[in-house]
Structure formats: C-alpha cells, structure tokens
Amino acid sequence: MKLAEALLLRGDVQKKLASLRERISRNVLLQEGNAPHEDPNALLQEAMMAIAELEALVVTINVANLGNRLPDGRSLTAAIAFRDSLMQRHAVLQAAISATQKEPDRYSVREIKWVAAVDVGILQKQSDELSRQIREINVRIQESNWLIEI
Figure 1 (spheres, rainbow, N blue to C red):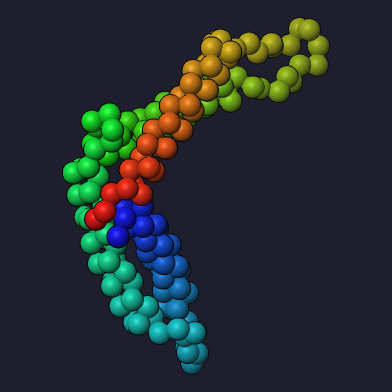
Figure 2: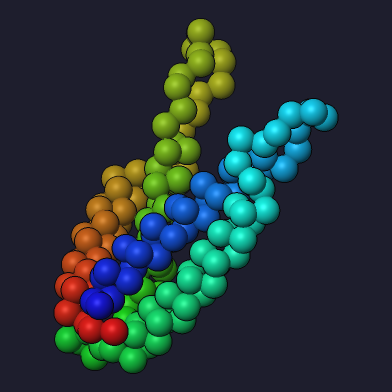
C-alpha cells in the first residue's frame, strides 16, 4: 500500500468515527417504550474497532513520515511541520489583512475615521509568497506520498 492510500484510508476511518459518534448519540437515549433505530451497543463496538484501526494507521503513517525523505533531504515529518508553520503564518497574515477591511461607518467628517496601522500591500505580498511556498511543499509531499510503499 502506498503512503497516500494509507492517508486516504485514515481520512475515511476518521469520517466513519464521526458518523458513528453521531449515530451513537442519537440512539443511546430514547423515550420509555420506544426502541432505538440502531443498537447503540453494536455501534459502540464498531466505533472501538474503528479507533483501533485508526491507531494502527496513524502509527504506520508516522513511521513512514519519519523514515522517508524528500529529495531535498528533509524527512516527511519535518516537511509536514514546515508546511504547518507556513500555513499558520499565512493564517495570521490573512487575519491581519481582513481586520483592516472595516466598512466606513462615518456619516460626517467629524466622526471617527479608521486607518490601517499596517501596510496591507506588503502583507498581501507576504501572504501570496507564503501561499506559493505552501503549494510547492504540498506538491513535494504529495509526490512522495504516492511513491512511498508502506
């Protein structure tokens, strides 16, 4: 199995667990005299098996990420951490840019005027550069994910 396939499977198991949680919640409490639509005990058992499957997948994925390297020599774990860092920086810049876009609420020249305390153009250029870097690292990570056999 390729690492990318394991990642897709992990996503599927996570979605299944979310669905099971919801189904369990809908079936564990009911009015006296009514029967649940699904057996909550069976759902709980299925959820526990899915959690065990997810744990095994996560361990396998983490071992593969730590043991394999990108062409530039970084481990996949380091590349993922770098990508996450880039995404956090991008999110901070986007939040700052968004905060400067306040609709004017002035009705006359005597009312308070809002001005940006940062250069939005510079922040936008930095944000665009981070977006480019995120795309590039994502491409390298995705490429490796489809090449690595686990």
